[in-house]
Image (cartoon, rainbow, N blue to C red; front, side, top):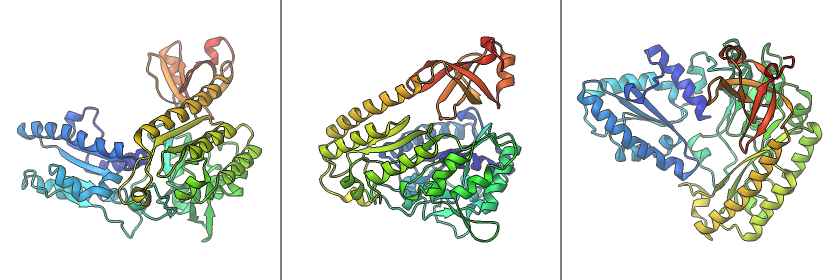
Length: 448
């Protein structure tokens, strides 16, 4: 979501003459787009601001002022405190107000000559009445794969999560708005669209006929867009994994065989304390139904270890669930208390040592499953959408249908140039823990 928001900030600022700079020191405006999900992410912002202050001072001395902005969920949650700790920051604005960036920048430019770190930075963290999407310019694709926000906010109020307080209540864009942006992205080069939402499968947008469509109906409509080759969506909640959405995985060819469905814990007691509103058996039933609809689907999930009150038995339940499901990929973290959330006031805190130990044990199992999943593709021919440069010369990278990163080595620069932006067949030569290495079929002497 932050990657999408950052791209849209660039679009909003373009009419003012701003374009992205490759060198931080040369930037007239620096915006740090922040995340408040975990404590470590929030802490990093202040060290980064300290580095920026030194650059800003150097630029000021040379008569070339730099403007600094902080955006996103940390800005939303800590706006006033941020300006107290870093009064040299010019703009602080939340994720729902970046469409007003041109006005904020204009105000800050007027104020820059009148203040010297006086703490008079501009704060805009209100939740606007009008949807910000109505004020954004037409979207353009940054490449062959593009994000598309269809839903924001969350009404689930998991006890550990700060999102409802920083992103607000659930809001779904209208079907017409989503389709229009999707068509614009495809027309400008996107071949894959990744539908985004804090709780994306809670989507319930106004339909063209004035009714309401859920995510499955929206996906079916998007699948009809000419030249669109792939669809994905993230992030989902088990409570909103409806039967029509599960059927869509088996019926819509361009909906990729990959599902990210966070479970967080395998213990029903912990799930209840988290206010997840599902049990481990509910989750396993969903997985069984999804696999029945799309047998080759790959599954990904999120896990939190050490939530207040989690016992060793609770953690063992999580390991049991992981073994029963088998994940192609997963994200796992130690519980991090977020200010203002119900869990931050809970007692029976798990020690840091115990959290670290459990996380290491969980990640050992998850990493083994991911490695095994990747190794199954060695020697297999896969279609890969080439969407970025690789690390090595004549190397490009992309994603398999199962969301694996694939690095493809070409024999000539011309071959690589022709492949960019296309879905090509490659043969997997090597499986690594987090990626696959491949050669294009024509380099092996085969057709393609």
